[in-house]
Length: 346
Image (cartoon, rainbow, N blue to C red; front, side, top):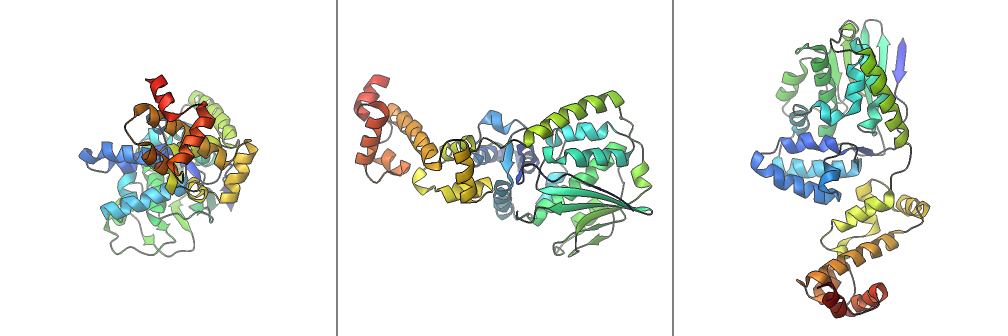
């Protein structure tokens, strides 16, 4: 029996922001712009950051948005619907590395190596036993993964294999899911074209060894070398900690009322514990309070300059107990009063 496993994730709990795009694309065209703006605000990302596939988003935020989408649409099979909208750009360099290999099994092995570039909450194992090949997906037990997201991952994997080999009806021998069987599996059966087992011990795709020997017409040795070198570099970069202070600042800046925000809430949105958040910020020579005060200052300076809101309203939204608290803070920040700053800015 041969076995191949993916390396442990270097930065557990995050994924490329590009994985959100297919879910947005299944919304009615008239809603997509508004939904995109809402999602960006929720993530605390600028338009350029949201459009950059290298931007990483905590899995906890993916889960939160998926729950919202399920509640809004009532579509139990939203993961399967989104999988149909996935293109190469959503999977990034991992796809380039994989499709430059030949045959399909070699492409899968390359994809396993660089899967963390797409998302690092799942490990992928390839096991060969006789004429059966099992692709097993092991999701991080510390992260709650919605069953719609699990089905999305399985569907994307199979549909990628079909597109890469050019065999539109490439079908596994069977597919196993650990979650319970949905009330309606017609969409699953139409997509997967094989027996489905729910409530199984592991999530996995079982294929014949012969199917993994199918050639890939677009395999290019030179492209394989170049794309692999670039992917290795990006994989090494993932081993470095994210700029936690910058992410905290983004999330705080996206809030309409800082009074309602806490360190616990921000840590949850980052997919980490409050102590972990404090430790990471300390490693960057700062703290949650310092970042919060910086964001408060930026917002206050902007709002005072605009002159569209009362000082009391600004103070309340920023979490000050009274306008006097904002006045005192403003003197520390600028050395003068709010009215003097407004006149100077104007």
